[in-house]
Amino acid sequence: MTDQKTVKMFRVYIRASAQQVWDAITDPEWNARYGYPGTNEYDLRPGGRFEAVMPAGMLGPDPFVGVDGEVVEADEPKRLVQTWRFRFAPDQIEEGFQEVVWDLHEELGGVTRLTVTHDVTTAPLAAAMIDGDTDLEQGGGGWAWILSGLKTLLETGDAIAG
Image (tube, rainbow, N blue to C red; front, side, top):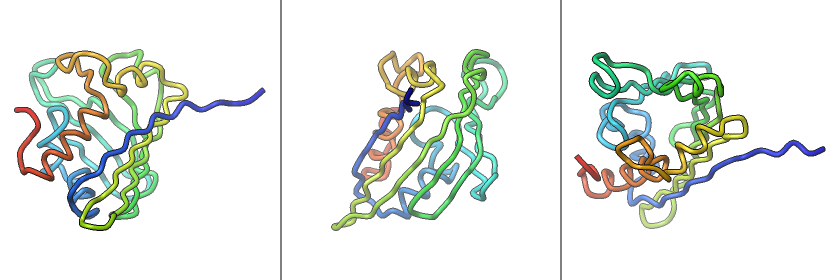
């Protein structure tokens, strides 16, 4: 019997340096400006915390941690490996942590190739969320929404929506 993994891969080319892309991913002042509301907060040491903090009013009166995990590897500005667990509902928490890998490769002409891989082998609910197949208003834009927002922000200075 073969153990099969289910890994989703998303790739985007961004007209920005790898360092600019890295900063936009890991710095809350940047990552609050694209994707979903809130900030992604990283302690960029192996074993450091990762938290996606959602704002008050998103699902209740108080801010809350919608995604958590820890940093496995941080090789600035080339590679970030982290664990990731959705915390919006008890069944998502029960799926446990998945691995997300951000690979950044600076190409010729000031373009960075960003590849995100998300191992959803044990997480069918997470797999459905990250695919971006449901309504944006229900949080269904997934990685395509996040990466499109990142690209738009770095290339134009403006958010994709807002």
